[in-house]
Image (cartoon, rainbow, N blue to C red):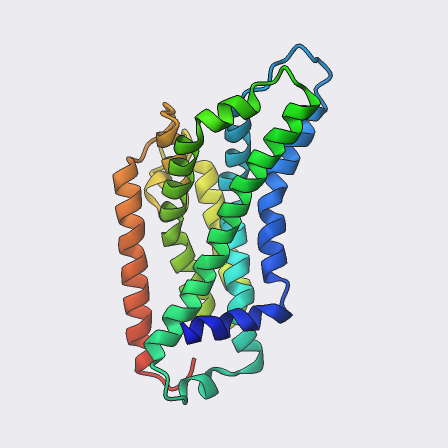
Length: 252
């Protein structure tokens, strides 16, 4: 816990937490503006369609790029100051250092998921107040368990992406390389939907595929258990392999 507290203190002088929050606000803001631009007051807004629009933007257009950027910028704190040799020369176990930094990267992603859900409910309440005949808030309350399940499954499915981007950002000193991989992952996730290219079997497609399975979409190609278990396995293999690699070195 002391290591995690120390890592959290490092974030105070960075824009990472602010970026994490604002990135989560963006999908809901975009969807809300689209709803408000609809001049026909006879259209009844529904919670399901509101959530679907927000989640599609988040999972397909933003999440993978965000994870790649946040991991690269976070590890760049040590890379830019060449502080690894000093860090690894302390009595603290190297494995614990690697795990602590992974926990912070995962925590930042989790914060974005939590903020996204809070903002979705807040946005629905605001839209409901603007158009009283909407069915956003009543349906949102009734669907709360389903929404929590949706966010929980998609976050677990994203653990594989978090670990891949974290390991890349840790081992590769340049910020550009992890970002390039994140862009490639974003393209995989986008192209995997409704295409027979087997891209849905790759980690970057799993969060969106889990989302499709959760809403019972016919476009889904990956079963939820496969995506969740595979994501956890990749996380364990990635962390164990990285710790073994780091323990044999004095610095990165």
